[in-house]
Length: 54
Image (cartoon, rainbow, N blue to C red):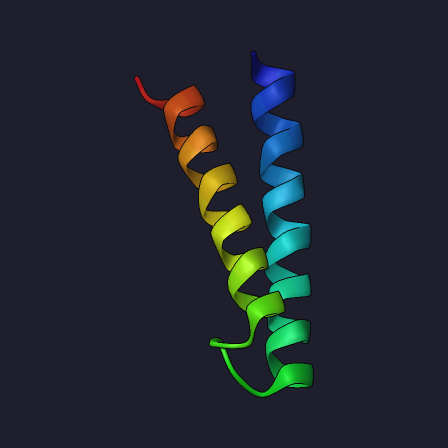
C-alpha cells in the first residue's frame, strides 16, 4: 500500500503542475479541459486521502 500511495502522490504532483499549465494556457478554470483535469485531480486526491487515512 505504501508504494501505491507514493505513486499516487507523485501523480498528483504531476497533475497539479499540468493543471496550472493548462489554466494559464486556457485562461480560465471554467474551460472544459481545465475543469476535466481538475475533477480528475480531485478524484486522485480523495483516493490518496483514503489510502493514507489512519
